[in-house]
Image (spheres, one colour):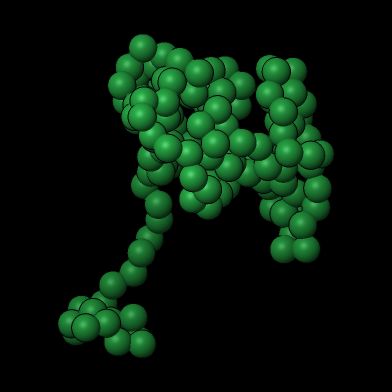
Length: 130
């Protein structure tokens, strides 16, 4: 039983970070093109012909797993920080992708833009405002 204090069965527990997010994709080559070629995220393992690809995002990973029969449903949003939101937006447009609008400043003090990947996953590229 978890108590309101965040203690579980008498043991202290703290979630420290997210190691990885794994997205199901229907076409690995198309997804690798989006995340690696378009977004500029380095590949650590796998690639366009693989059934599993791992990309490096800071200290964590964005994994892609081939699931050709995956049904697209809205599941939420993955937010990835970048150095320059506007430059990243231009990069994606130049690579032939269509972000969901121009970069904007949010009231929660982030500059961001949203884009939907080839499998319908909503991705936000963002940067905290100073």
